[in-house]
Image (cartoon, rainbow over all chains, first blue to last red; front, top):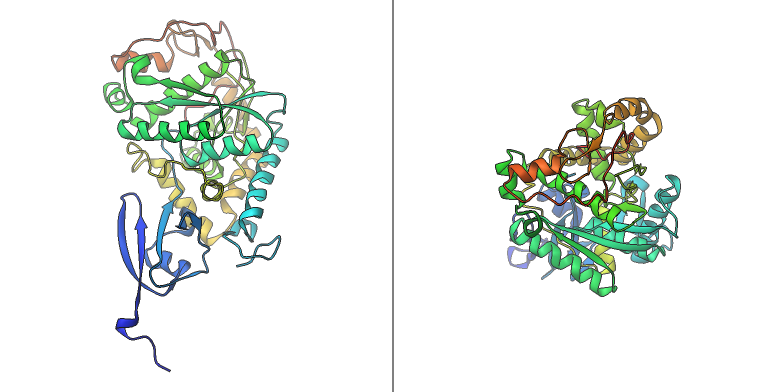
Length: 77
Length: 324
């Protein structure tokens, strides 16, 4: 068995908010592992692709473009 | 991940319920939790005229949508706070939602009505922006609800909001606020009935609800809120929740079940001696209410004394707290 070579690595496009920025992350990678790699708490974000929620166990594949959307809000109470 | 109800592909996991849901059954779950909160705390009836405070964010648009789908009669209230493009954009989202369902949205613009905005007004009044914003919104929510003859004012406070406020009040032992941190504050002269039907839903769920329903909402955080204590408490609680799913629910609902009553007396004492604001007539413990003092210090125009929520004496323990 051989693992993927460097040129086989997929790149997942990731948009983050607050501040808004875009990253390319090496894949394939599951949502849960992606959030862990970015040190994001799963309670504080949702992952959205083409306007739909992406569950935590899904593996992101080549050319996936996702948005990691923060859900924490709160100023004046 | 499979849906706990139909075993189809799930789109979201809710760890505190140890459950995953597909889109259809997630929406049902949200409705079930809101209906349960309304019933458990006797919030309102189908015949009531309801006003929901709408910011253009996920929580207020989600609860407006949920209440409409549950068959309630609900209008919206938007308060423009003059926070630059953030306020402009938030109004766009509120209006867009109202338009899609042909709803009535009341709009109150603070800069054009009272002559100040939150960024400049809070600086002039030497208040932190979130404090000036919160007290302005509470004052105007009360006024518009009573002026419009609404039976109840709904706010979009969710489980995370309530747990974070409780955390802060407990951390500093603000016992005068603990007694009024309830999902329902009954109406008294000068104050409308206030309820929080989202207390059984976390904010991850209200955001997911909007995404699944296709409701566009303002994702970006208020620029004035960055770094505030409330967000810090939420982050801390999310760390605890990750290690112990259900911790936020247990913290808040355990407080309601077993502790809130012990602080009720202090909360009621705190409201003794309420009279009418000399300027606008709103209930206050001072000669002039906090909102009118803010307007004066911010160099704005004092509101006219409409008398819609004017009081003369002793209102009892109902006023929305300084923290909530």
